Structure formats: C-alpha cells, structure tokens
Length: 66
Ligand SMILES: [Zn+2]
Image (tube, rainbow, N blue to C red; front, top):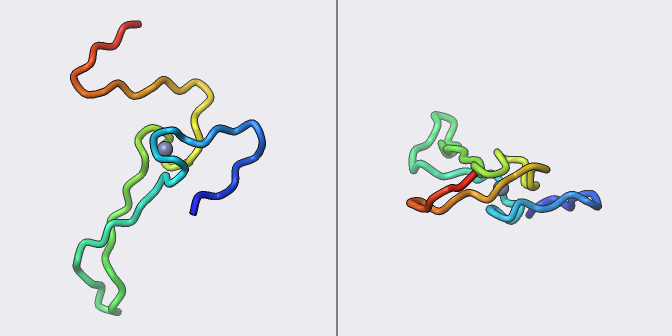
C-alpha cells in the first residue's frame, strides 16, 4: 500500500506511489527465506512522490524538444 502523502505533495504519476517492488528470483537463502531483487521506479527513484521539477519520461523513440 502506498503511504499517505502530506498535503501539497503529488504522488508519482508513473508508479502511482508503488515506487519499489521485490521480485522473487525463485531461489532461497540457506535459512529458507526467498532471494529477491529490488527494483525502484526510475521516475521518482523509489520515493513514491513526484519530484518538484520532474519532466515526463518520453516514450521510447519519441523526440524530445528542449
Ligand atoms: Zn514513481
């Protein structure tokens, strides 16, 4: 579940607040726990909220004009 954000802070539009996920590799540690890989949202870098000066991530192959 995404955590509630303070007023005035926007939730990341790319991940909807689910900024980090753990992916099960299918392997286990010697103690029986699962080996996982962690992946962070590239837009908010795992924070779950939109950076103040964020620009939309261009679609692959699209032209970016500055
Ligand atoms: Zn995000």
